[in-house]
Image (cartoon, rainbow, N blue to C red; front, side, top):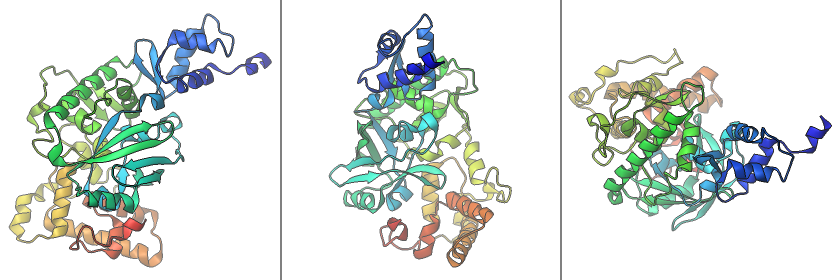
Length: 415
């Protein structure tokens, strides 16, 4: 036992060697370099493979070759579809891919990464930020500086945010806006097809005994295949896999193959419109909700799946025709319809009356929290459910009016 403690483990050796290598290495090279640190025997290759399987950042890039995620990320670019809330509040909600991009070490332990990262806004300031949790979702709070930068550039929720990795290990990133009008739709669709094909191959080759491949593992493997190394990044990962691939997302498990369809080309499957033909891709954080083509996962989310106290309203009554028939609408309701169309265009919206009924309940809970300084756990949960369903930031209700200018003096900018 004393002899074992004299030498570093295979896990430690593999992590140290790969993390210090700017280029991917073969298993044979890893074994030879490990031999400089500790004795190796006939079972060395097997021990190396076991170590690789336990290291999230050890990404396969080819037959028997592995790279370190932080070393693979530089110069790769990612597309983040901006939403109305993000433009107004300056907080970017991250999906698993983006979380792995900004905080590569997180998925090794699934514990918060407290490091500061540097984000250079093209033509604007450089911000120092860290990971935060926004309504149960990992996020980057870029704050008022980001909001002003977007405003000065004339950006809107119709635009994309392009994220460039400069130095993942050092935490250096860049961001620039791409207006909706300058999207190169044909090339983006081609990148979407490349992403979907690569994802299908990766999931199809997964040899681990499990129901599905975790999203963060698939994200890392896609980075290892240089899917994001092109100067024109594809659309949101969840959107692309939902629209272009034969993969199916199983909540709390990951992606799995859901049959084969070789008839797909650059057009989206099932006759559905692509982002260039219709709406923007759904918000990244909602990607996990699209478990199937009918949007059942999204419907369950907004009906408070797992929270029986949230009533299940009849969405069938809340169509646009019913809303128009009422002859009554307002800017708040139109904003809700716009946000719902962006995030889930297949879903039937609440009608005007239902919207304001739930909005009034949300306002009541926010007022109670403001008056007493806190809410009971079930009230806090209910408040967040309503806020997510209506696309209303609870903090905004304390000091704002939905009829005011979107870029007015909004309290939550100072969070």
